[in-house]
Image 1 (cartoon, helix red, strand yellow):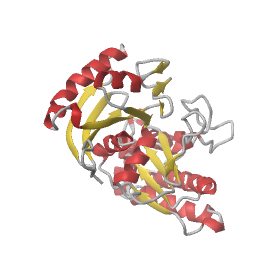
Image 2 (spheres, rainbow, N blue to C red):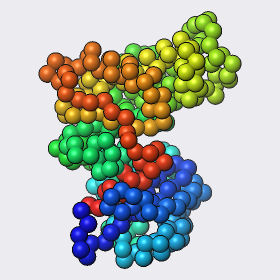
Image 3 (cartoon, rainbow, N blue to C red):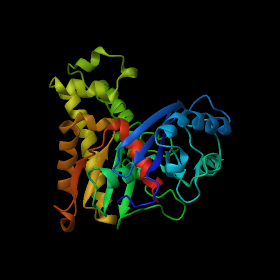
Image 4 (cartoon, one colour):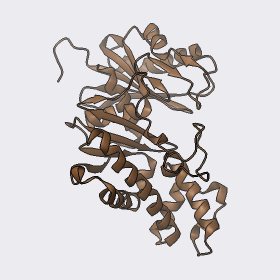
Length: 322
């Protein structure tokens, strides 16, 4: 892969609402140097870029300086691949449209590309993970929300405006009782199948039942998806019911997603995947039950092979090679 005279490294930036993690990555997907700064606490975007460059300098020195860096990739909330901007991200301090790629290009003197965090995860999986060699797959990220990256014929789907592929906002509950979503609509998949959605389901299931459960020992407002996993490990039926409910919705939704791109795999990534078979078994069961016959048996349902702490940086770095 490495060519003579080609710059051997890229920078990957995983920009979260709280922290920003930078990695310098070689062409084999090894993170050779890493650093981080707080995203919060920089109300002026120019101060954020300045502090980022200062934090990156020791890592750059380790690889022989900026002259050995081919480019930079940024995975950010509401990152737009076409324009290199972050647009109206609700969890970031900067409001409106932020020209993040242009600011880093001027500061570093290298090409910079931007995409949203779920698309970055898909790129990382295709370059370094279980989707390596695949040209048609759908990445589903299960964290605070539900994100997705859709790869068709080896290319990410961006649509006309850079924001295609928001599968977390497919509406799965069209009734008046549908849960309110941060996007302003009701009943979105994200409200049920994210880590926060699982916690909300736990509160609802506990309120509807008198069955004993270790979850009742916790403050309902502070229950997490990890608490539900720990209860499931103890054989708690309410916890198992929560995962079955969540997996059923997600599996049915993936069966619907298959109709528009006929993927060879769905790759699941994020904290909720740590629940293992408790979440994956009901996903697979519902998928098999609801998939159209012409797609039956064609798509694998896989869990990401990338380490959680590295995946987002690797994913961001993957677009830095372009």
